[in-house]
Amino acid sequence: MKLLVPYAAGGGTDAIARLVAQGVGERLGQSLVVENNGSAGGNLATAQAAAASPDGYTVLMANQGPMVVNPHLFKNVRVDPLTAFDPLTLISAAPLVVVVAPNSPHKTLAELVGQGQKNPGKLTYGSAGNGSASHLATILLAQTAQFEAVHVPYRGAGPALTDLLAGNSDFMITTVPSVLGLIEGGKVRALAVTGKARAKLFPEVPSVAESGWPDYEATAWYGFVVPKGTPKDIAAKLRQATVETINSPIIRERLQNEGAEPIGNKPEEFAAMMEAESRRWAGIIKQARLAIN
Image 1: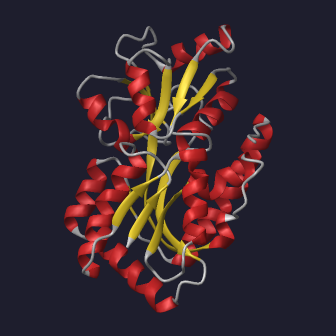
Image 2 (image 1 turned 90 degrees about the horizontal axis):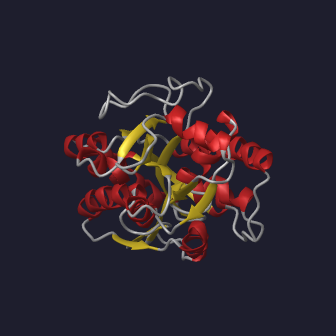
């Protein structure tokens, strides 16, 4: 069995995928091998998964980029993820965090935004790729706070963070799992979290809402889907193994330690959430006039 991850190794999506894949494999009595492919904003991995045989041997790690953002962002997307897959369950959701390098002159989010307002287009930010949670969360922040910055997409959060540390970009909004160790080690400085409330893992860091933009909120979410037409009994077995993994005390604790809230909802609930997310991000993308060939 293989689990396709539409981002490079080292990011938050990859970390949660590997954590859950191990437990699912153990419960099914076989390996669930993780394969990373961050090309084209995750579109290639998504198309690969959609074209796979619906026999239960291919699972896609689904999140908002490939599933609900890219169809509105990329002009040449050939797969409609909401109709090409059968949802299994939403694994977890988590806020993101705005980070800068330790030597950045910006000590608060207000200072960073102010720089972007005074000097439009001078700030640069990295992301895990076009359409990723880190990309769209920044677009939403720029719309909300009314500033401009230049986007530099990568094939995952790991490479983007490496360039941030090297001084090749000014800031990044990224998932907590991808950056938690760097924050704790003092390698990056957190300016704000994107949820409405502060994160339990670093309660000293204010939210974007607290920093002056009360209407702002963005989260990253992760789930499992399988190719459309996968037999219901096989899909149910995969979902059961996934939910049991999520609800196991060790995995729940590890997810929470990564800043992610374990969920494990029903397929129809996951489907409804993705449809709502698709409508939301379609409006944000239209307003930002984003389109990628």
